[in-house]
Length: 272
Image 1 (tube, rainbow, N blue to C red):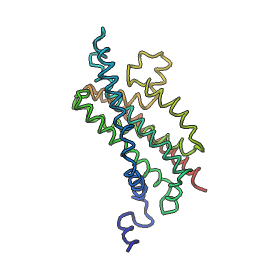
Image 2 (tube, rainbow, N blue to C red; image 1 turned 180 degrees about the vertical axis):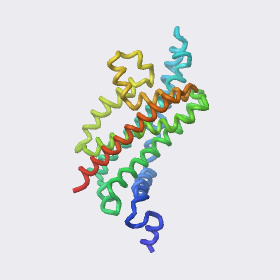
Image 3 (tube, rainbow, N blue to C red; image 1 turned 90 degrees about the vertical axis):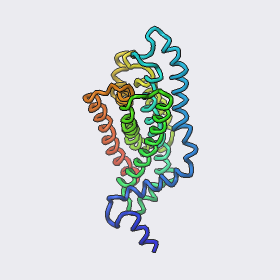
Image 4 (cartoon, rainbow, N blue to C red; image 1 turned 30 degrees about the vertical axis):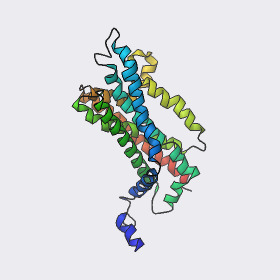
C-alpha cells in the first residue's frame, strides 16, 4: 500500500521527469517549520531600507537642487533597485549555508542520492525551492512598495519575473561555490567582497555614472546592475525592448552557466 502511494504521488520508477519535485518537497517541508525566522531578512529588512532611504534620506534628496533623481522622487528611484537587490540577497542566503549543510553537516543530499534521485534532480529540486523563496519575498515587497506609492507604473508587474531571474542568476553560481566549500569561512569572503559591494555599487541607491570609469565597468558585468536597470525602467514605465532583451539574456546566461557549474561541483563532491 505504501509503495503504491509513493509511486502515485511521485514519478514512475526509472523515469526522471518529475523526480526533482521530490527534492523540492523535502525543502518545502523543512521550510514550513522555520519560515517565521526568514520573515525579517526576506521581507521586513528590505522595507526598512525603503523607509529609511526612500522616505527618510529621500526627503533631503528631493529637496535638493535636482529635485529628485532624474525627474522622479528618490523613493521611486530606489524602490525597484531594492526589489532586485533583496532578490539577490534572498537567493544567496538560501544558496550558501543550506547547500554546505546538505553536503557536509546534515547530509540531506547524501540521503537523496541513496534513493532513485540523481544529481540533476537534487540540484533542480533545491533550486526550485530557492526560486519559490525569491518569488514570494519579491512579490510581497512589490505589493507593499506599490501600496506606499513607491512603484506606480502598470509595467512594474513585470519587475517580479525580472527579480526572480536576478535571484536565480546568483543562486546557481553560488550553489557551485557552496558545494565546494569545506568550511563556512568562504561565505564571509563572499558576502564581504562580492555581495555587499554589489548591493551598494550596482545602481541600487544612485546611478553608476557617478562612479569612476573602472568601477562602472565592474558594475556593468554584475547581474544585479542589469536587473536593477530593467526593474527601474519597468517601474517608471519607460522600458525599452532592446535593453530588456539584453538584460534578460544576460541574466539567463548567468543562470545557465551557473547551473552547469553547480552540476559539476555537486558531482565532484557527492559522487564517489
